[in-house]
Length: 192
Image (cartoon, rainbow, N blue to C red; front, side, top):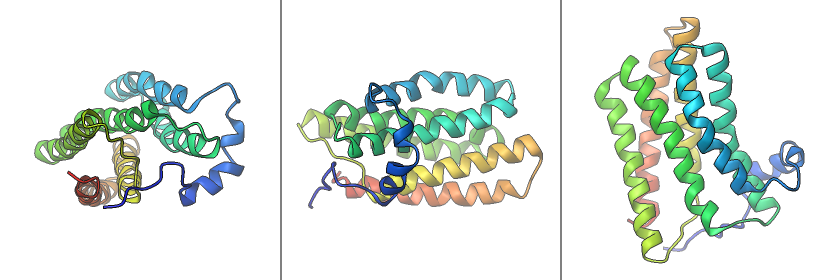
């Protein structure tokens, strides 16, 4: 199986090059953005837990967006590091997994939430095994699609809880189910 060149730009990188990446000061590295996501995850969780949705939902969306921002910044500025290649997806899984445990388990279904977290845990375990074997595998289109679907599904569920749009709950469940499919495909495309 051929591995994707981590420096090769994704389609969204071309948009990010002219929109958000120029807003990142030159002294801010992609790894700093990843660390910001890790540090802000407990803040997002707290705001969602105390149901401060007017602040928590936009902050969740912003923190999730930093996933696209750090990756695009790294590829565009040629600042890809082994640390970032490993910890960027780990930061995503911490954010999504913890919000899923907080929101999906409580408001949708325990087993569905645990399934999402289990697949994410398998992806983390695979990354640790690959790193231990000296292989660092960068993100692919299946992993990127999975993350987008997860963020969208969680966002729809949060909006349903905040604004009372019950129609968003089944749409959220469908979107998260599709994310699970992409997560499983992603798991196998990484060579586990």
